[in-house]
Every structure is written in C-alpha cells, then in structure tokens.
Image (cartoon, rainbow, N blue to C red; front, side, top):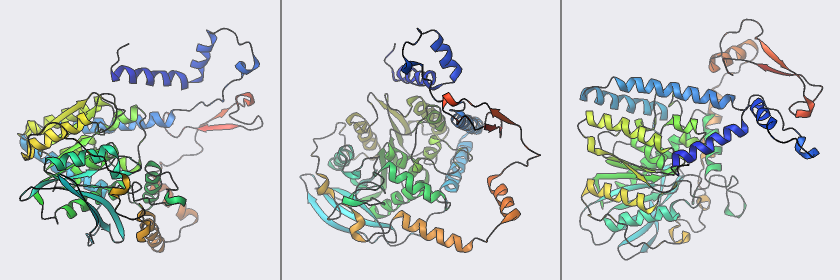
Amino acid sequence: MSDSPYSRRGFLYGTSLATIGSWPLVQMLAAAQPAPTTKATVELQALNRFPRMMQEWLVEQVRDAEAAGKAERAVLKTKDDAEAYVLSVRERIRKSFGPEPERTPLNSRTTRTVERDAYRIENVIFESRPGFPVTGNLYVPKGKGGRMPAVVGVCGHSLNGKAAEAYQSFAQGLARMGYVVLIFDPAGQGERFQYLGEGMKSRYSGGVGEHIQAGNQLALIGDSLAAWFAWDGIRAVDYLLTRPEVDPKHVGVTGNSGGGTQSTWLCGIEPRFTMGAPACFVTTFRRNAENELPADTEQCPPGVLALKLDHADFLAAMAPKPIVILTQEKDFFDVRGSEEAYGRLKTLYTLLGKPDNIQLHTGADYHGYTQGNREAMYRFFNGVTGISKADKEPPLVIEKDETLWCTSTGQISELKARTIFFFTRERSQALAKERRGLSGEALKAAAVTLLKLPALKGVPDFRILRSAGTRKYAKKNYCTYAVETEPGV
C-alpha cells in the first residue's frame, strides 16, 4: 500500500466503517469465521440500528452548501465579478459574526520586560472588553531604526498558550528578522483559564474543554465563541497600532491549528491586516464533515453554511492582499481540501490581477507549526515586506513558561478578572427580563416557529422495533419506536 497520507486516511476511514457499520454486514463477516468455542466469544454486541444517521445527514447538508457556493463562484468571469464577490463574502462574514462590541479603553500595561540579545520581550496585558484581560508577549527587535512590520500571533490548543515551544519559536524567529510580534493567550489557555478550579487548574482541563463549555453557553444567548476569539485578535491589532515601533502598512497574522482557525477568521473580518499565513487549518467544511473531524465551538461560526461560506471565503475577504496557506502532508486537516481552497482562491486572485499573491505551502510532516512551515511563513512575509532576506530560522532560546507570565501566579484570576461566563450570565439575565411569558398553545406555536417545524397532519408513520433482550438495546418488556421525521432521519 502507498505510504501517502491519502492512502493511510482512506484505509483507516474505510476500516472504521467496516468495523462499526451495519449489523448485517458484521453478521456476514462473522459467518465466514470458524465457529466460536467459548461462551465469551458468542456474546453479541449491543444492537444499534441507527449509529450514523445524524453524521450522514450532516454530510449531506455540508455537501449541499458546498455545491451552492461552487455555483456562485462558477459565474465569476471578470475583475468586476471578483470584486463584487469579495464584497459579498465580507458582508456575509459580518452577518455570521454579528456586530462588533464597543471599542472600550484597552487599559494596557507592561508587567515585566525581559532583555535578550536581539530583542526584548514585554509581558503585556490589555482589556479587549471592560474587565476582560488578555495576556500577551510583545517581541520588539533591538537596533532597528524607524517603524517595523508587525505580526499578530494566535495560538493553537496549547495548554500553556503563548509559551508553547512552536509559538515562542515563530515569535522569536520573526523578531530576529525585524518584526514586532504580539502573541497572546486564547481564552481558556495559558494565563486565561475561564473556569478556574483548585490548584490554579481549569475545571474543564483547559483548551478544548473550556472552549466547548463557554461556546455552548454563548450559543444560548445568540453569541458565538468564534466572535469572542476574533474580537481579542482585533483588539490585539488596536494595541499594536498604539506602539511607535509598528509600521501600520505591514501588519500580518499567523497561527497554527486553533491559531490557524483564528487567523483565518481574522483575515475575513479585520481589514487592517495586510498579509496572512494561516497554518494547519484551511481545508473545506465538506472534507472535515466527511472525515468526521471534531471541532471546537470557535471553529464553527454560526450560519456559515447557510451563508454559503467556506474556509477559503474568509481568505477571499482579504483579496487580493498576500496570503500563504500553510499545510502538512500528514495532517488530519485534509490537504485535499487545502488544495481545493487554494484553487478557488487562485481563480479569484487571477481575476483580480494578483495571481502570485495567493500561495500554498505543504510541509512533509504531521500536524503542527514545524520549522519547515515556519520558514515558509518567514520567506513569504519577507517577500511582502522586504525587511529581511533570511529564509532559515535563526537559533532560538526557548523560555520557561514563568518567564513569559504577565501575572505573578500564571492566572488572570489574581486580577479579579471578569470571565466569559460573567458576560454570558449578565446577558442571559437581561434577556430573561425582556422575554414575555408563554404557556399553552402560545408556547407551542412559538416553539414551532422558532424551530421551523413543518405542519403535521395526524400521527406520523412509525416503526415498532421488536424486543431483543439479549442484544441489550432495550429491556425485554419495552417496545422501542422509531419515527422518521424526514427521509433518512
């Protein structure tokens, strides 16, 4: 078998389907095996007749959304068409992310400065919302005159956030080449645990656990964690532009994995970025759904499929500014989708007269911001800014986490900070006061309208599934029913 990522992925995915597929298939496979010889081997697995129903329904919905987006792009033939498309995706992205919050004072401060040979690190705190602190490290090159290009660095799902080795590495590498770099902790990581428990640890393990908890709560009030993450990035640009060292004509964004997510969304909603390098994220929603790839709530902006948006469209919103998509051959973010996203953008950039401003780099490694991908980012940004001719990563010195802390304890809880939950609860209470009480038929009618339920004519057809106590999916005295609400569901 070929050792390409495609063959490996296909083999594993195919194996999982054969293993967890329909019961008749398992029975057919079992019939060809030697007869069992022990009681343990004849015990049947619990029966589950509908294990993939919702997954396959989701895949079909995503395929339909992608087809609608393709049809929309297929009619683009001229530069005017392309420019209109760019404006359209910007408007749709804003609709997905909602209106921006108020730009309140940053209240920025530097809590510590660390001197190194070619740069200094300022441990900074700013507030993206009132009482909601963001902890970051500002890398400032030494011995450079005048204003310098700047980069916002956004982190993937590292528990220690900005202190993770790969993220320190690209910040240091860029600083040694002459870039001012601001890299900050995402909410739920590094010094920004939102659900702090005993021992200064997260009650939800940090990272993914905190993101899902906060994101699900935000969804209940009509908000999204994607918008909260993006707003932190926008305020990071606000902070950078207060610094006299920064050249506003060159402000880039880069990040890997979850940081690739954030940098992709930021390309779509922050027009002050002049270049971008999202790493290990950009593919297509269809590939993610078909490959059963899990995602945090900040990776699923509300309404994107209904708005016919895909990953590439967030980068299209920045067109024709320079962007490089960084991928890995062995990544779980399907590189086939990355190539499809790049192809769509290449067509758009060509119509806009800037075909070379969109590039794709595919490393040979697994998921991660490896040195090879970091060097591809350096070369790309250097080609845009002309600040350096270096194409290799300079020697690095990885700092201890504590050196990069903006707080004395390593957690913003010492600042009596507000959390996402604080704002969610406040908004929920305000909505409760506005909500009129409903009961009886009025409540039923409101639920039908909100959920867009179809009108029912009598009792729907249903199945009566026979009891099979030895299969353990139902007690022998129970009857189990299945109601088909739409074809296949």
